[in-house]
Image (cartoon, rainbow, N blue to C red; front, side, top):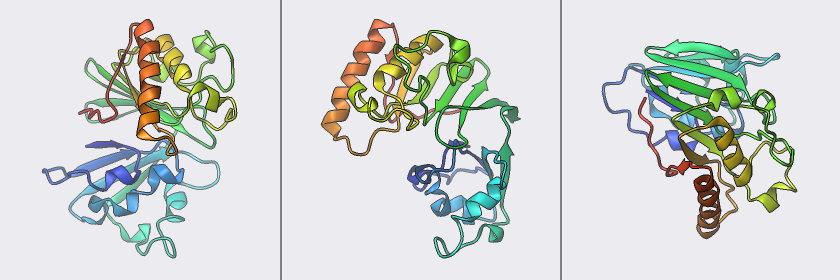
Length: 237
């Protein structure tokens, strides 16, 4: 089992099957991406092997950085007491987990942030959860070599990507590390992905506002002969 990030959504994941090893790929260490880790049941199960992968730092190891969160007074259990959990500092590049080839690279977001490309056979999933590919550029850049995340997403069957703002909101949030829906549409067209799954919605948006944003995005994607997947998409790799 491979999990993408460790937000609150990891807590209810069904790991009751005979799964002896779980790998968690962290994009970065902002709270919304790691707050579920202490409550993920397999971390407290000595019969499970959990591997946590995350961006390398020039100051502290991944284990040391997460230990600042998973220790008193923020949490009663210390990482040093979890003998079944292993940490891996990810340098941009490619590594394998069984039959899955994983490529990690730095993408545009405050702090050290990774995007991931997972390939198994003929299937490719790209995960760029918090991403600002254009970084304020208008119109959207047309040179792939200078666009953050291009190689990770290029030709992917499924692209899971940041879609936090409408275009008006983005104008006052340039540099915050998130995308507008038109930037996502332009990025998806540039990378020639087959299906787009929106991610990292603004928590201040109501369900009705999200519906409007998705309708606008659908119109943009249809114009580029692309398809948007559902937010609840489950990708089995």
